[in-house]
Image 1 (cartoon, rainbow, N blue to C red):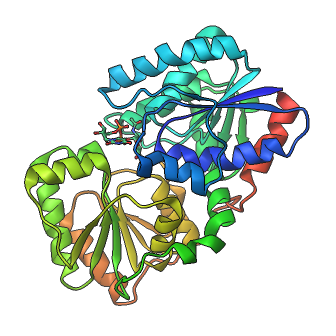
Image 2: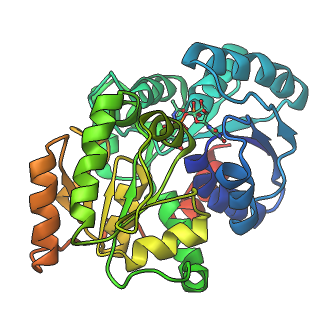
Image 3: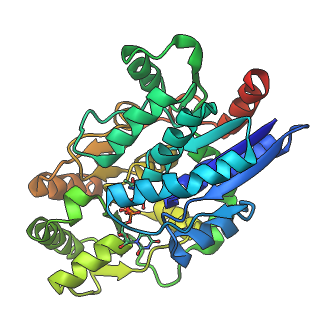
Length: 355
Ligand code: UD1
């Protein structure tokens, strides 16, 4: 069997790593890895390949940045000849980024079967580009691997046949479980004893300058009692630059961190404040309180079972929740079912059986 994996952006890398490893342990499997180049900076891509021990991509499409149509269109144009030449038996796509939908769409037209890893998640908010990518990819895939039972329910409601859906657990947790023992050594030096770890990159939080300013002001206020470590995504850095906001001891603006560094930072954090999807999951696994600066989540299991609290854009609520954590009133969560480090093994077994 020849499996071709497509990845493009930072959150894809920790998902593809365990699946390629689990498949490599099987006999008679050939694998090809395509990197679309959606993320291309050293610290958004290369360092993850190194730390996660992902094989060098066989193809790098080097699409880079652009509008959604430009980026998605370029990926389709550059991916089609690769997949036609490679003739894989199946293509695997990951998560919800533009690379995911672009590759799935090319394959569907060429009648190449597509498996979607991290299927079925829904925020029910179609203003998020990722929600469009999730909905469409799940309609095009014929094998859907879900991380939590809500994913199965969403897919069934959308008319996806039961036999295509497989609840396998969370592949990102596979990577976390494997690399957690190495993380402590990557903890950056000179950290305050207690700190809040912050990430922000959603267009809805960072693209509008006055909204971003009120977020940064609220964070600076929190920083007076709990220092803030904020590794800044490139699109956010650009916007912060436009605002002229400056670095301080209480609100430290850092470069994007490597996988191991960020994992170590999460594990030691008093609280994590984020608008990321994957970080809601990682904090739930680690048992660290997470405050999510979004109105919705496509990962409800992190709220229902885990340590996640949805804050929206209510800065007073954010400040109150941080105070509650500092006063020892943190939300205690549990680890969701099948987040056990073996999701990729289940995927490999199903792929072997199904083809
Ligand atoms: C993408 C995903 C998002 C995911 C995020 C993780 C989509 C629609 N969005 O958003 O779901 O949570 O990745 O990071 O696919 N840039 C660089 N260097 C890079 C990559 C990006 O400087 O290596 C800058 C560019 O200015 C670019 C901007 O960041 O225009 C946004 O990058 P893009 O890939 O369009 O979307 P993300 O915001 O990263």
